[in-house]
Image (cartoon, rainbow, N blue to C red; front, side):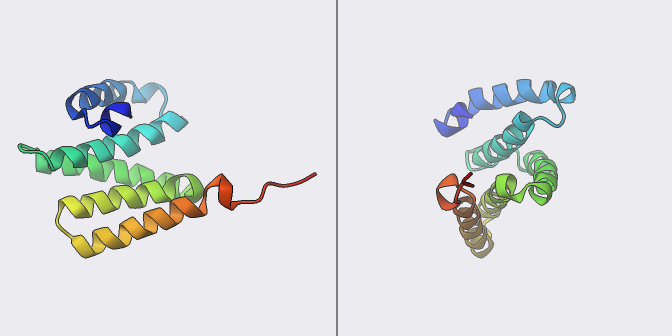
Amino acid sequence: MLGFLFGEFEPANSYALECRNYLITVPESVGVAVLYFYDSLLALAQLSQPLGEEPTTLERVAERQTQLQHWAHHAPMNHHHKFDLVGSERCRVLRQKTEAGELYHKAISGAKGNTCNNKQLPTN
């Protein structure tokens, strides 16, 4: 996660690959959703770099999107905005500007709508 956020894509990719090797042991943990989200963003960021391996990278993102969509369906407050953000980044890489913009706005709205600051906590 930090490697991606700080733009250190090569080390981040190595760490993500190492994590992917262990996914079979924790297929439904919360950490897997986080890994899929950042792994997708990492793959798309690398496509923006010279020498991006587009076909296999886009396949990797599509696989991650399938799982993120499943989680978004069952827990939209936690995952739908992430699904939309990855979709917007995919559209950006593919130069689909209109679709990217729409999905960016949708992701932002979804994230804002599901923050603790926007919800009232139950009182006893």
